[in-house]
Length: 194
Image 1 (cartoon, rainbow, N blue to C red):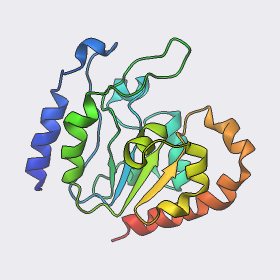
Image 2: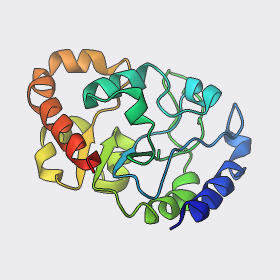
Image 3: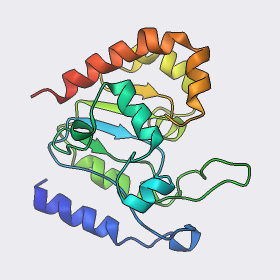
Image 4: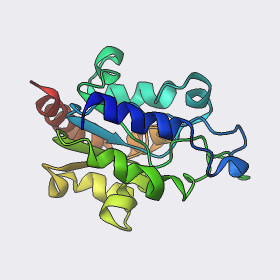
């Protein structure tokens, strides 16, 4: 796909209103793509700060994720190397008990496959959180997949969602910093190198 054709697809996505009546802040699709991206980060859906700014992972969870990757903001947002394509492109709202709602079910079937089909240079996909993992790998437990990350290489690398809640999980799972993160950084560096 050419830059122009992908730009047209992103423009169509940007104007999507299919689930507008279900979105408490209205539609504002957020994704960052280039046909030359070599690392795909598949995640859940934008949070409120991302909705406000229109920049994926432009919040504390993004800081945590970039720390895990050993990646600076400039590289992270370089669409020539990194594509950011969530399961849902718009902020879905809050659950009554706290946390964000699941990604809207209309979004991925309508748009995500069309975008991914055009990202033909992707070498590695990070499956960040349960929604991305379940969509690609089927039902399963995030912790088990992260612990068994080597099983999914070289195509996929499962990760927990980098929300503030993950801090406690990281403290209880020292293997994540000792074993997973060094391999993650190596695999990511290999994927985005020229």
